[in-house]
Image (tube, rainbow, N blue to C red; front, side, top):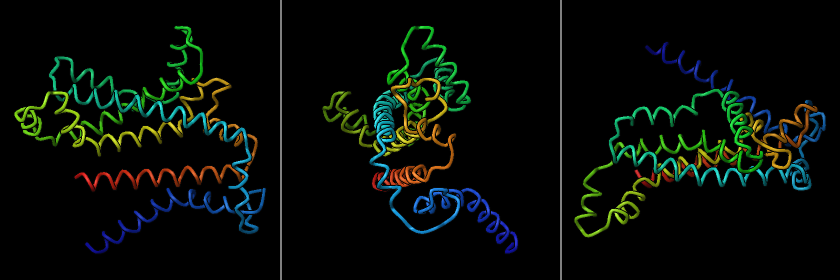
Length: 257
């Protein structure tokens, strides 16, 4: 038994090394002085300071933040409302609707991007912020919906009934009792939507215009030209932000068990 446990531990270590070693190398070389970015020549913070002087990169970051914020807000409304309606009311086609809502989570991104592009061209909607936000909401709001549904599964129906018995209206019971209970799931789903939207590449590639080039598209275009240490720096910033988002989610979850 001890041998099996050790073998599993070694295997887990190799898996973790396989996943995180490339990320560690990327972060390390974001502090490398060499422009070739393949040989360590010394420590520097120049690549981070140069990010703020890169107007194209800053503009792309602004575009990504605009899209991510609107995507998150819309996804929170749609995901929370969808989860609540499926929980509160019983439909004959509820399972079908739920399957259709979660379908964008498993459809290959290339297919999703092409299908959305065809839709936008067919209805005459010009590519830009609107098309990017619509396409991002398509695959982001199911994550909010799944998170809220998982929280609703443990909801005590007596909470809402008690609020109504004490004189609260259905709207007050929802906003003052149920929403605080669902807040950990809402925050978790919102952070997931924000990070997914912020680093989405494939779907955005098909639905963005030249004037709404997001940060992943900018990075992808520069990578094709060759190695650039500034890309390591901006990628490290992304990693730090993702870790912070995960920590916030965990703190909220522990404060609201």
